[in-house]
Image 1 (spheres, rainbow over the protein chains, first blue to last red):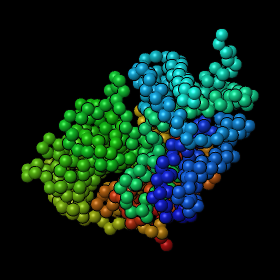
Image 2: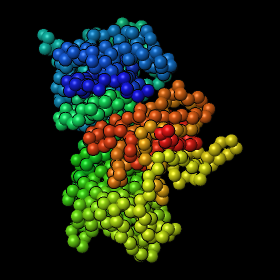
Image 3: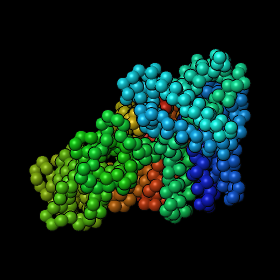
Image 4: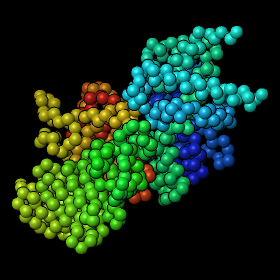
Length: 177
Length: 455
């Protein structure tokens, strides 16, 4: 126990890279775990391993790629230690989902398109989405906040996500055309 | 004619909506697995939906990574790297730190129609640092839990809700006051600073005050008048203890209006049970043990008297995080006990000391063991903690664990303020010992806590 085996000479570059990749790492882990708490635990383990192996990192090389590889192994290790019934995905489904190229450029472009599409939502719909994503309210809390049934909130959230998904998809097609 | 969609597509979208909203039932989880397993095209749909969710979180949510936030600060304003960098590592290690930091650093704009907005009309102080669960109530009764460093506050009441709470306030003249742990302090400054400590403790570093307008500190049992000094106050229902590090403070016992001046390195207990006579601070001690058999005065937990073979003990008590801070409204299960008491010498953690904890839990679970430390002037020196894995415990069996404080780390949620906190837990006064099982009610109970000195 403890951190005695951790290197004490983490460079500023390393810290900066680690900092900048947190959101992306969490996204990578979350879509494989599909559980927020479990994803946070795996993210912490990943950060720990990255720090332990900081000496292996060569400045100028692809930090994100390295970090994602570490995260991948941490996800696998976590799944081994966790009781099957506590995992969202079965092993075979996990392997299906896990088999995906993590294309950073594509993700950046998707985010840009989604931002554009979000800007096209009505102010009311933006405020509605903000309740979920900016203020972090659950569906039930949102229902209380907007005075609707939870079911209606669930449906509206879902429709807005689908509409954003379709919008981003359409924008991408238009760019490619 | 439009292209016919396979029926599972809509169902998958619905399941994915429930997945990202954390509402997926066991039956739905099984169905989600089935679709993903049997429909090759479902994989792309899954990732596409998750892309939208992830991008919305990235763009709309306040980042909930304390390491991210803290490290950004470090890069902008470099400080001594020798301890900052390991702290980043520690930040990544401890979930509670991440969570607490999320709680206190999230800055949320007011929701339409919401009433929990702090309307600041006449700021008298700013928040210098904070950590843990805190509630601020402004002068007009407006509550806020979304406090963050740099916020300006008008007069009001600040409450520390959990043993790990810490809050430091700086008045416009540079005087600072700080509460730690479960405490409640009301403050105002309309030409004269007035503080009322309802419970718990606070320390202050007060710059010289205007002639004839000393800072007034009121407790249930005493009034302290401060012109410019360092001091700390601990208040309980029937007693208030004033400890003066520098300068001089006038103490008045409210029950009989008797007053005394308390000078540096002295303390006085204002209570009907004690003579109001300042006494020199006693020499520190390096060992300590809890005495739960004597009652619940020491601890913050559910006190259970001895029964049969079971010694008196404290059980973890639940603290449910407010929905505004944690949408999942999770509950923290925690136990804490004061170490340095108002009426006893300071307990100092010496290098080589060990911390021994005996207790029990129903279900083995990793446990966070920690201690809250104070500087010699009563100021907050940090929370240090260690996580002991579940493998060290057995269901329903007494555990007796001895911990090396050398392996404790500064609470990652305090990383931002690490430069002003201690780098190690040693040679500092131990304010309290605590432990918790985070969100899981595992029936944690503690029979005894002990500081064992170096051999």
